[in-house]
Image (cartoon, rainbow, N blue to C red; front, side, top):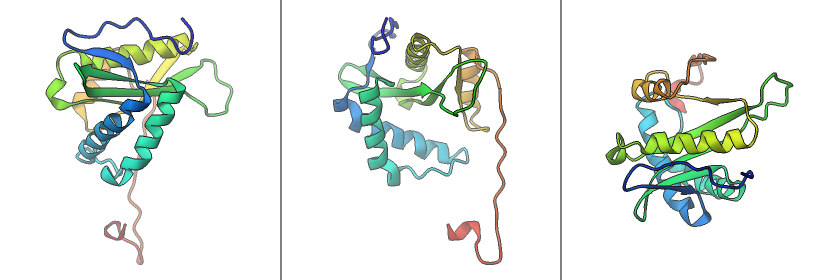
Length: 174
């Protein structure tokens, strides 16, 4: 299978998993806005709607690079996954793939859609020669962390964060 070939991933009944194409960019961007809005509940700093156009452009790049899949229930896009290869520029003992975003509409969760999208990304990354796949989840998003643990992901690196306030700038001013 070449880098642009679709991995043989079985979608759950009633769904299809396909490569993201340019016609899907708007629908995938709308789902990303839902993802970002939901992540705010878990401490994310991303602004959902303010990034819609930028994310649409990013989705178009993913379509051109064949680094995203969408899930459909008939004709509606109900989920997506974006991925790529790690490009830190340092020599490493393994080439790593990265799942950037994985999202399924809440009404379609629990049907295996997220698992199918993750499997598609993992297969595409394996086809590109990666030896490991990394991803991130918000620390207090226990549902996401549980999902990834069920799929064999284990903590690898911990990111720590601290708010910075001064006499002239507070977090309310941002």
